[in-house]
Length: 241
Image (cartoon, rainbow, N blue to C red; front, side, top):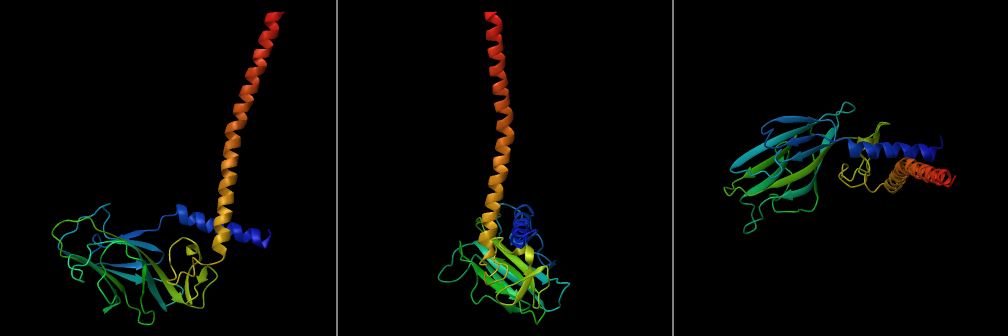
């Protein structure tokens, strides 16, 4: 197989794996006070409920990197969406999120508000600390709140054959490139030049599949139409005779 063709096929499989393979989700309120080992990409949300109403709650979820390839590992967490109460007089009074590397608070200011631009937090891999995600709610009005983040385990190089090396030197699973999530923490897994080729290849494959389906449906229909016309002509000939 041509090297380029092999590369296209490989990347296509990776993308379809990302589309049809669902990453697990951990919920802060459901696993409050617990520690979860992260060995693959995980999503983090507040609650399994679509529109959770959380009141007067403090929950901390601890995430620990699990990397069988290296002890020099850590976690990258990117907040993709947040919908919490807005600041009052410059402070997050009702609901807020804090991110920790062990006992060290990573965010300089409490996180709250809505539709926050993506923010990325990284644990110090040399300290082997857990990443803590803390929800503090002092809200009694039961507002709808939401959070969605993606967390990715990594280790520092050298990378293995089944891994992708980020521009910042971190190693992540090769299955995570071009999945529209910032798994590296510097977007280098999404800015890769191969992503454009991958998306184009998938679009071509989808076009071919649609064309084949159309042919499967249309050809029998055309055959039936021609048969019906032939039968009508024979009937007309017989009637004339």
